[in-house]
Length: 233
Image (cartoon, rainbow, N blue to C red; front, side, top):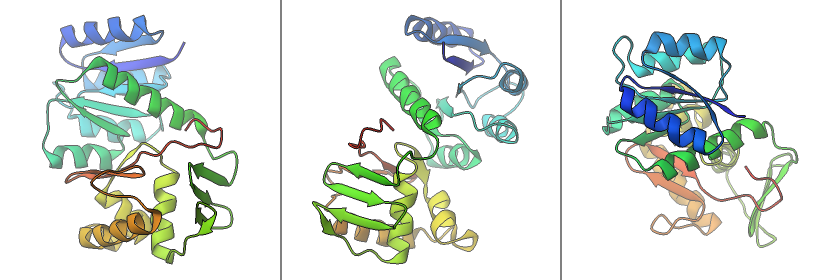
């Protein structure tokens, strides 16, 4: 059974999450403080963490940072905080996704399954990743759409590679800027907007009806295309 650690200071939410998760075949360990969460993450070996930010002893972002110091376990934040700054802080601390309360259980379960798939997939089994008509050959750095080559700049390709190697994950502006441009560009979000717009145009994607790149307003972007080469990630 997949082990899930639920961290929330409200007993009723812990009970509700335990009931829902166990009904779907998950093994649940639930705690109410940040200190307990760090210990449980280290000793219980959960395969995923559902974490509230408003804990009585530690802020959730600090819990994420402490867990990240020894583990890459997927962490999904479930929080009443809906400010962009809180989302960015949690994601930059190492969270994999962020769901705002109140939430639907089905949405949480879908995010949980997606995070587990990414975690269990590891490195791509093949250098070529296909998303319907789009094909990305990571090994040879070649991109085609409907078998026609797509000419990307070095920066555009680096941005595309960051997306396709982190499918479904909410990538913040700061993370993408550091990943593609380097640490000195973490606040230059206008660069990112320009290159995402160019990448979308070359791949035939549209911000108003995205098939590949979804904008998370004020926070970042998410690669939403499903692979069609037999890999479920």
